[in-house]
Image 1: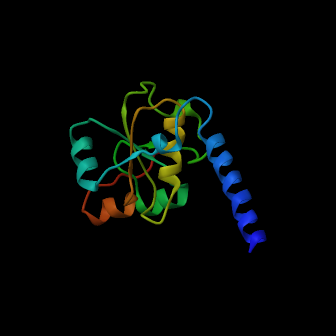
Image 2: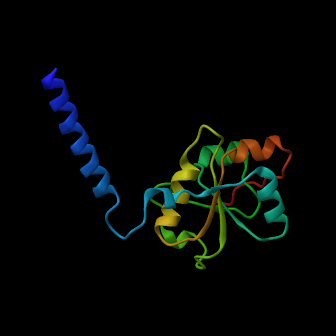
Length: 143
């Protein structure tokens, strides 16, 4: 029993010091790097008003078969795209998306934008599949 209690005490002290290390750095916590979630209706309204830049984090095959949101910026990679692929204004409203709710590429790309100083970032969790299912228009991807 003493051995179990000692193990728990050691584990607790290690977890506490690890959590403290995770919060060190520039004062930003990981939670602050979570983009907002947007609905298809939100994005449709914003695109109609030209108040957002959709950012497509899909690969070439998905874009070819599903299309893209009209006017979308097509990232070269969801994880290692050049930040210069995004609009220069870091206060621009950006909505990242990928294939569907099972895909995390849009979320990953959005977090990368936030890590690089973009402040008005959201993700469309339903992706291009949800966009199409809602009857929204798509465009053929530009080469």
